[in-house]
Structures are given as C-alpha cells and as structure tokens.
Length: 341
Ligand SMILES: *Cc1c(COP(=O)(O)O)cnc(C)c1O
Image (cartoon, rainbow, N blue to C red; front, side):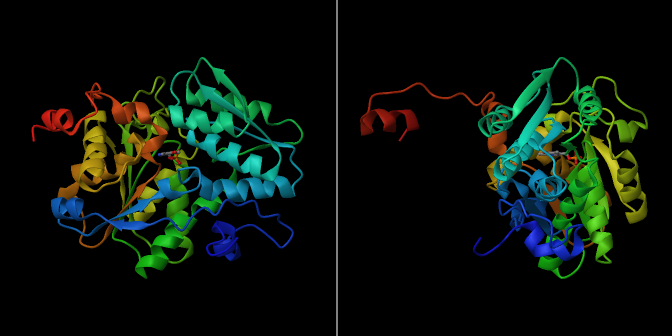
C-alpha cells in the first residue's frame, strides 16, 4: 500500500500484534478532523469533527476490525461471526472477504439501514435475520461462535477495542494534546471504552461525553432496556456489552453520559448536513446533539465529536420527508419556471 498503510501499520507498536500477525487492512484510519464553524459559533468553543465515515466501509468499526480479523487469521479461524445493528456486519464482511475467510452475521429483523445490508450481502457474508433485538442477536452469536474455527468479532472481542483506540491517538497526534471534551454516541459502548483507553494509553485525559438515544438509554437509566427504540439504529441497544467500560470512561475522565431525544438527534443530523456539509448517519449525530444540549456546562477548550458513520449508510432517513420533484420538460424555460427564476 502506498501512503497511509492503515491502523496496524501506523500504531502496531501499541497493538497486540507481532511480526507473525498477517495484516489484513483496507487502509482504515487517518480520517479527517474537520473544523465546524457553525457549531463552534453556536457553542462558543472550537469544535472539530472526526469524520469516521471516511473509513473504507464508512464507519469507525474498521479500526477494530482490521485487528480482530488479522488476529482471527493468525489464530487459524475459518470464519468470523458477529451480531450487528449493521456497521459491524458491513465491516466484518469486507475484512473477511479481504482475508479470504467466511463471515456469518446475525441481524435483528427490520432495523438495519439499507446501505449496511447492501455491504454485507455484496461482500458475500452469510446473513441470518432473527425476529428479536440486537441484544438477542448478540446472545445467539456468542453461543454459536463457541464452535471451533469461528472467531467472534463483536466489540467484546478485545482486539476490536484495541484497534478502536486509534481514533484517540489520531486526535492526540493532530492536536498535540488532549481536547477538553471528546463527545460521541454510545450504543454497545465499545467505542467510548476504546477511545478513553486510547487517550489514557498516551497519558491524556479529555472529559468523555457519551450520549445515548432517549429510547435506548440503559446506562443513563441504570438498568437494561427490554425494547430499545430510536431512529438512530446503530445505537438501538438495550444492554451494552461494554457497560462497565463506559461507566469507567465517564467516571475516570470526569465526563458524562446522558440521553438525547430522537428530535435532538435529527436536528443535529440536519444541522451537520445543511450547515457543515457533512452527511452522517443518525446515530453519528448523537454526540453533536449532546454537545448542543449540554453547551452550558462545556469546559473551556477544544471539543472533538466523533461522527461515527457515513450518511449514505441510511438513505431512507436522508430522504424521508424531503419530497423528490416530478420531472418537467427538458428545456431551460421549464427548469427556470420550477426555480422561480
Ligand atoms: C457501532 C456504532 C455506534 C455505537 O458504537 P458502540 O461502540 O456500540 O457504542 C454508533 N454509531 C455508529 C455509526 C456505529 O456504527
């Protein structure tokens, strides 16, 4: 690979890999840290957006998947398996295809955004849809992956968490210090856990601000949620696997984990698209929604928000209620008339 060689090439010295580990990479990481002038003016802080939609499969999941699939291949796995709200399966399917091993994904019925499903199918994963929640799908996948030769690549796989630390290292490298606040959405809570561990590993300590969707906020409520509901399907999780890690990130960093409503998430989603020029998926807007909702308690200093996944993942939400116009005659006059020019 020319230029950037991916997360393991850049940060292998901090990762559980050796010279015997075959590196399965798609050039993930090195995503842009984009200034957000409109948001910065709104919250009176410098806000920077870590655009994880620029990863090869369109979400931050690739950072951990490169390590998890590389280790699975090193350990002789014939296949990887995961439960997923969508992006884990898209990433697992791509890295498994790259490695030439099998991939099985278990999805909750009816709740996976179209783009993510398209990715998993097209990369050749075997897909099983269950009439249940993500939490059900994860329990099933854990039980089945105890068989020989199948590596579980959900974020309870420590190699996933290890690789996902790299987002913090990139922010630290770009800023030369810690931001005051690092905000992000919280679903299964692997990402807040990993981001905090990443900062800690290099001696930095931003306040970690995590945001759950109000209809799927088990950590905020202090108990699992049996039937989580939110438009932000990537964080529609009622019993996070990395619950303890998220609580530790919050408490050790002097941060917070609170809830944002679907209305607040969609308002932030819209603001990012129309004012900052960044189309993200709904879940990815939860961190920005949280910063806006909690602006009165922002400490001084730089605010970094992880925008976890690309908006093209979920075209249905992007287009909902927008009204696609009917065709008119193919003449300048007809088009001018539509435009009122
Ligand atoms: C996986 C995912 C999340 C949630 O991350 P967790 O590690 O499960 O908390 C948020 N947004 C997007 C786009 C995701 O793919």
